[in-house]
Each structure stands twice: as C-alpha cells, then as structure tokens.
Length: 480
Image (cartoon, rainbow, N blue to C red; front, side, top):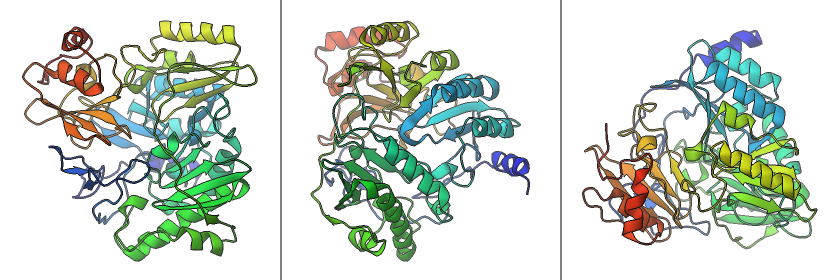
C-alpha cells in the first residue's frame, strides 16, 4: 500500500466512540475515602502514586489518539503529537504553529506528558498534517508514533542540578523504540520517564523510569522494583523492561495497558529480565521522587548561560505565542507541567525574553495570577464534559496547583499534591485536596473561589473573594 494512502486511511480512523466499563481514563471517586486511580487513597508507593490499583480487565486495545489516528471530538478532529522529552527545534516550533493555523483551530494544547495536541482539525486535513509532521522530523515512524511517550527532566543540563543532559538517553531510547517490530503492541498510554537525578519526573507515575546517578550509574524502576545499572545501559534496560511488561501482561490475561494495572502475582521480574538480556544489574534503593514543576522565571547554568521558563494560561498557546518562543539555543522544551523551557540566553537577553513573553500573555513569575492553574478541555470541545471549565477557572496564587475538570475522568490532572475542582451533573463543582493529605473541602453556595483559595493554601477569604474577578464565575454553580 502506498504511504500516502496509508496515511490517509489512518487519519480517517477515529477511535471507538464508547468506553466500556473499567476502560479509558481511571476515575477518582468522591467523596473523600473512595478510590484514587483505582486504589485506596492511603495506599501509595514511594513516588506518591497509588501502590496497587484494583484489578482492571480490558478487552480491547486503547483508543488513545495520535498524529495519524485522529479522535473525533465535539469541536472537530483531535491529533496528539508525541514529542520525546518535549524537545523541539525552532524549525519544529514554527511547523507546529503552521499546522495549528492551516489544519486546526489556531492553537496548540500542551499535555501533562509534555506532548502537543491540535484541535478543530477538518475531516480532510489528516493527510496534510501527517505530511507536514513527516517533513519536519516529527513523525519518524508511522507504526511507532503513538508509543513514543517519554518525559524528561526539563531543566536537565541547564541549571547545574542533577547529573547532566539527558539528550543521549532520549535519542537512544526513542531510536530503540522505533526500531522494534514488537513495540507498537505497547499501549499509547505506556510512559517512560528519564530523570536527571533530581527526582522531578520520577514522581509522575511512569511505567518505566530511569534516574541518572553519580559516577556513570543509573537506577531503573518498574513498579515496585528498582535496580542499578551502568548509565550507558539504561536506555536498553528501559526497552527490555517494556518487553517484559508485555510478556507479563499477556500471562496475566487482563489486557493491562500500564504496569500499575497488572494484577497481584504478576509483577515484572526486572532483575531477571535484565540478566537474560545481558545487562549487569544490582539491587538499588528506591530514589526520592517528587513531581515538581520548574518555577516560571530564569535558571542559571554553571557555564553562565540562562534558560527562560514560562507557561501558557491553562496550557494552550496561539500560533503567534508559539512562534514567540524561539530562542538563540535553537531548542524549546515542553514540560510535563504544561510549560516551556528556552535555553541558550545570556543574562540580559533572558530578562528581555521574559519581558516579551509576559507581554505576549505567558505566565512568567511564580506568583502570577494563572501560575499553577490548569484545566481540561471541558465544554464545548469535549462531549463528556459537564461544564465549560476553561471559562469557569479562577486565577489566583496558591501553594498547591489546582486543576479544573469537566467530569470525573479528570483527564490530564497533575500528580503529587493538588487541588481537584470537578464539575458535577447537577451544575455545581466539588473541591478536594488530592495527594498525601486527601480531604474534601466544604463548599457553600456562592463560595467556590473561597473554597479553592483555602484548598490551595492561600490566606484570607477576603483575598479569595477579590480573585473571583477573572474569567471564572466565582460561585459553586456552573454556568451553562
């Protein structure tokens, strides 16, 4: 079959429109004390993720969208573009801006895995989009495009922390994934995390995590198992761990998409897997992990260069904003916290770039009104949403991030400790703190802004009332 016809066929294939029970995005049930990601809220592993989810049985492949398999949403087709490590060249940034203008709604959405989404794509635009991505090296393998899910520490090599750059790991792991005939069997949700040792992306609940260590060593973590390997062997160890997961999932017979979905008694035998692959490994302690976003502003590197760190409001940028990100380092890094890191500036140029991006509408300081505020797509783009959460979301400072969800699926919510604001079928919102200190937040009529501010750890209720003058309604009731 010709490549063009294959691309056209795949672009026209929407995933199934219904989600059978126990499939799709796991739910976080209310009220407090129920289920978080399928596990009791108090049962958590060292990374702060649920230690053991309830058994999940899946009888189909996942329907996660990609660059070729577009999802049909209420606002048109949706394409999800895997960007390993979130790293883009300036040329690729310009190509995505052109794609948003030519084929989508003029915006680019950023996901909680540092990937990108185009929405509002026309029914006949799939082939053109695929060609554009292919010509800018954003689609290196059509068979593997949905399984290139790799997050990486966004400040690796840029601020003097951690154990240096992750680019060699990224390139090698991505090439290994795209070179195998068996890797397309992985779910489009299976996630690799490459951590430079600071523990930031190691806290994101990935299926396979690599953590750089001193003296040329690395830790490999899969589920509750951790081993130490030579840093040079780490990408191959990650690949073998993924292969072992597929074998374990097949033996379990539950159709698991993620490591945490494997039933009890069917854990990935990590040490034996690496031994069989000829990769020397030794026992290693569980490393510290805490999902922490880089603060907006600038970061200084030991070599005297600076990186600029910004975030778009509610995780979406216009094509004009996207183009404004290009910098002298020739690279833009998208973070798993829906932000951008731009390397390669001197101190003066970094301050000027930060000022220009502030003027362009980006969040550029940790205390900016929209810092730490996120939201799913909501109405009108998502058929499952119960509210227009992007309109209702409220700006305002807070210690904890807050995420506004249009339904109980809570697509794209943060990891770690966060404030959960979720629309309900009766036209209201619930507010809860998720993470180590799970609790429901009392919410009276007309007190949504106050409840959210209190949950985030801000001070006076009177301050919270003044924060209700943003794009949200500031009440406990959704507006239709």
